[in-house]
Image (cartoon, rainbow, N blue to C red):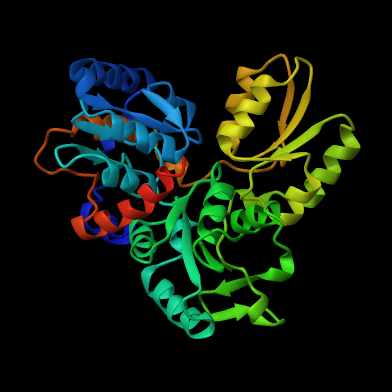
Length: 368
């Protein structure tokens, strides 16, 4: 089921009583419910979640790690996923039929995932087949809808994460001459460059005009990048880096590969969320870092490393707005409603889509 369809079917406005409760009362309610359910409840939280929610996490991590932990936790009857819609979908795909996955606020979508829908993707695939024949394999970032994962799975492709994108591109090139990379052009471009593919061998597919943005000989193309992006990571600029270089000459700049190619080129290091956390943890006391990723995570890293000078690469950056929709009132409300007949805010991926999407996920996991 698509994000919009799920939203229309399942979204109910949070009762006012939860909004009027004090933070202390909400925290106590969450503690009490967690104690009541014990191992029957699993509460994974993405790194970008607010501290008020993360404090109750049974596990923190990136989207795929949390989905894998959900799959491994066969004891939990209820999985309340504190993240965004596509993450909860992935958890539902990987978990068993007798487990229920919930999202505390159904409005917690992902603008990047929404930049590739099925109609656009099917039109693109048809036109690219006309151009290139059977020489293309699709890959999709896990930051995509279950329907897109299913499409990729049916076409022999796989999902990727920011941690294993290079491995999966190598895997794909062993099978076909060309790759269609959905839906984040920046991760696709940065990963391809790391593998030695030149920018002249890449083109961008615009799903709104159904056109290939490329002026050279299409026969030379190796990577077709979907014209999508993360609104948070695209907010970091080369000018931000230049400002850091002037104000803090000894400060290192580390960014996520969802940032633009220019930003990655001008940074000292680039890598996944887990990579960024690991690098900072292993760095010397007194070292200085400007981090180009989501603000909730940057603030948490700052709190966890008082012995280092750490700041956001863009001090005016806002947290991810959709991630921020999960808050204490919604979490408490969701937990309160777990065993009601309404199944409100439950994420259910249809069996047909789930089986095809799992093909894409399993191909990636087999190469992990």
